[in-house]
Image 1 (cartoon, rainbow, N blue to C red):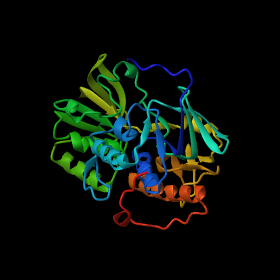
Image 2 (cartoon, rainbow, N blue to C red):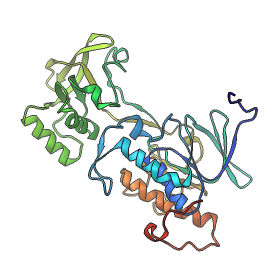
Image 3 (cartoon, rainbow, N blue to C red):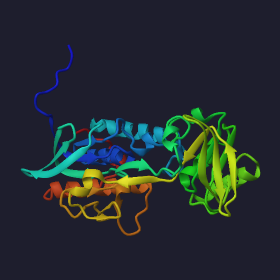
Image 4 (spheres, one colour):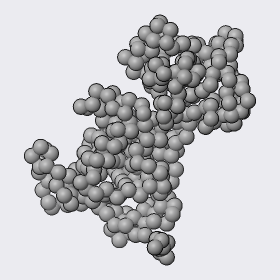
Length: 344
């Protein structure tokens, strides 16, 4: 018997509504659960994992404590497993379009009409709604999804290809290193000789260049595309002195960052600074009581945009929420080694 569409939109009650199913949002489920707080997680993407799943599932991450190396995909899998004792309720493909106070609860309504009633709200939306910064190349749209990609979903798809990577940040350098052992050729193009990536990775990149496994083209910029859409055959480059040359290319990976957009969140009255939510770094509290922020979407003095920083913010915020909801119930700090993982 097929499921019937309800006449009235669903109403879901919880202690904490977490907006964002990236790594920090998933860890917040665990931290809230350890304090006996029920959570629902809402995300506009079709899968949990945020940018880790959507942008670089096979990319190795090196700065997660206890894991010298772990892929983004595996990290999300582990975080989901860690949260499972607390029966997380995931509501995907759901963008929260309105937030208001309703009889002591926060009322969140998604674009599908689903209503969530929560005692507290944690915004862990990463970069918010995001899209790639496209290089200004004529006809680029006709190659996108076939020869031009703004993320690498499957490393195996890059095997045996002539690849041009454009950009000078962590993504460009990391993928140049990661793909160097499977690509037919790798060129990394940057407008200057200085890369904005982890120093150790820049050192590795230069060593690969000396060994002839990666070709570093600096100071160059992309100037045009060659081929018959959707198949790319070459990429034109322009040196800072005006000279041009063409590189054979099957794949172009432009890594010029993402354009952040808070979307509906920007209209909720939360204090902001440069597309980020301003919070108290010790509690995660925003300027609106009961609404908290964690992860890349927040800012405060000396904020570090690292997953591990977001994990710490999730723990601090969960404790702050408990103290706010139950001010007359003492919260004695216990380590998980002593407390175990309690059920709700």
